[in-house]
Length: 328
Ligand code: FUB
Image (cartoon, rainbow, N blue to C red; front, side, top):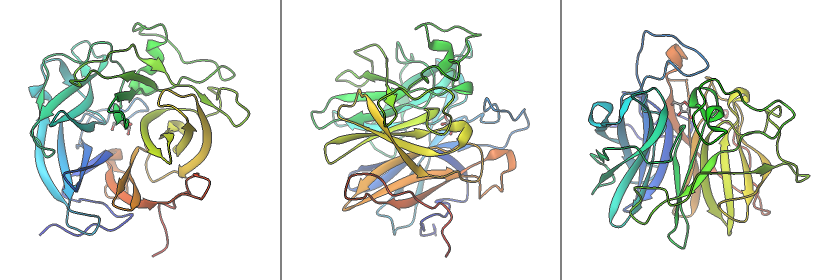
């Protein structure tokens, strides 16, 4: 019998899961995580330890119900353009279909973003033959606005290769900006009506500090690293992301999905492990943060487990910081 989930505890313990993208589909909560595996290769800051090969889908009737693992819904061997490293995915619903967006390395070792479709939120998903043309780097997050326009946010530094795309083409040895230069932002593109292609080029999202200046690359406490997510609250667009090397989840607010965004503060301080990655979802009257840490594996191979916590706002729309390890 599956266990009932509790806030701040691993959602499932029979597999290692990470990078949870949570959505409400058909009145239930569906979570699209990546799937960490044991490995015997190198462990480094490029994430070579994250050799993931497949995706599972998890679901719950509500936040007090047992979690169902719907099993493997897509494997890298069934993705013609991909070779390895099925990293953080996201899902969306449109046109009566479910779409799974996922990054992987192509046969040249370059990260691209692909899409797979299903008639059910629980999969299985069938991948398109080619990756989405014009896509690159990692961590797709799809946001559908109230006017039904879908946007794909993506990008990640270091192992996620975003630095290599500053000219618009892949430059193998490209370095990131100097510490006093503007930081690299996540990318955003509009998606086509059928959700299978980008209808605009990927645009860089600008994140400003409270004085209206772009966050600099040296400001590692606040600048973008990976794992973008967008949600809308009280008609404002919230861009949240991981700061990577300083291990926080932070957020910025803007008036349009394309930005610019103004940095606000921390949602989640560092958790056990190196990476931190999240999603934010409303279910009934409440909002929730889904995130991961390495508590289930004890840090072995940096394998991660997905958790959730309630997220609350102050009256001015700012988000109250969440304690990942509250006293019981
Ligand atoms: O899970 C592999 C990578 O680690 C993700 O794509 C990043 O966001 C980080 O969580």
